[in-house]
Image 1 (cartoon, one colour):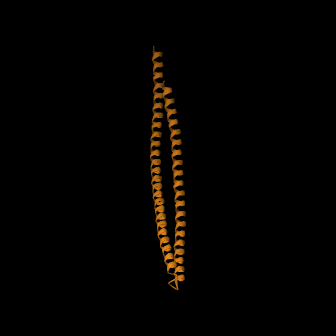
Image 2 (spheres, one colour):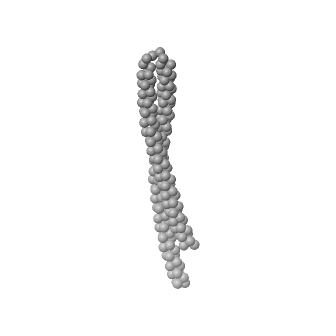
Image 3 (cartoon, helix red, strand yellow):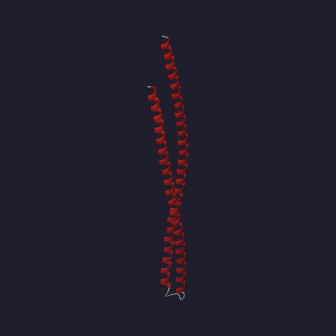
Length: 172
């Protein structure tokens, strides 16, 4: 009977040791899970910051497009004015001796306006391309970060599950 009690004490001691180890492993898994939550929060903050940057770049791109449209409208108005001047010059050519000089002045203005438009259009096109590249780069960075986070969380969740399943199996 004493032997049975000794065996029961030994079995209880082993069971207590296993329970203690399982509790430690569970606490460690909880700590790792808590760290994953902290990491996920940090990545969410990073993602939010990238989203803000992307929104800002989208606003800049929209502003650049608006400026381009405004410049195009101004050019259309300027071209219409130049055409009106050309028509006036052609009709007054017979009446005025210096009509040829006026036409040259109007053409010079048109050339200056066209040059200004071309310069502005080239700058705006380059800026729009640059902004689009930045938007594309930010989108790729954001997708990459999200994919890395998914992979890391999936891997760590699998490890936690394996630990939990192993602990439950050892208790059974």
